[in-house]
Amino acid sequence: MEKSTTLNLRINPEIKENAEKVLSQLGVSMSSAVNMFLNQVILTESIPFPIALSQAPSRVNMDTMNQEELNTKLERSLDDALSGQTLDAKEVLQEFKNQHKDD
Image (cartoon, rainbow, N blue to C red; front, side):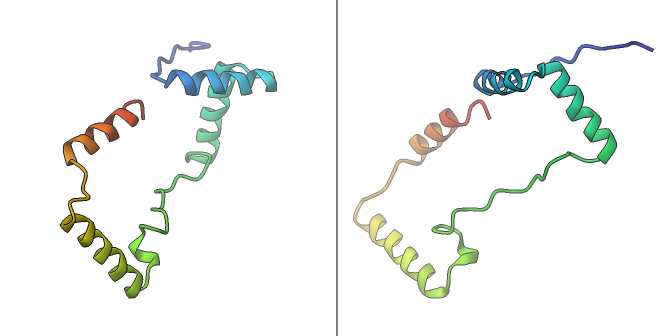
C-alpha cells in the first residue's frame, strides 16, 4: 500500500492564502490540515463540523414575520413596482453571478 497519494483540489485563491496564513501560525502544513480533516471524517463518519442551510435574514424571512409585517412588505413592494422603482432582472442576475462565480 502507498504511503501517500496526491489530491488535486480547486480552491478559491483568497481562501487558500488566508488558510495558509492561519495554518502557518499554528505550525501546520496544508497537507497535514487536510489529513487531519480526512481522519476526522473517518473517525466520526461525518463531516466534522455542522453543515446547515443558511437562514434568510429576518427582515426577508416570511417564517419570522407576522401577517401584518408580511402585508406591509408586500404593499411596499407593489408601490415600488407601480412607481417604476424596479431593477432589471438580467442585470441583477448577472451581478449575482459575478459576485458568486468562485463559490
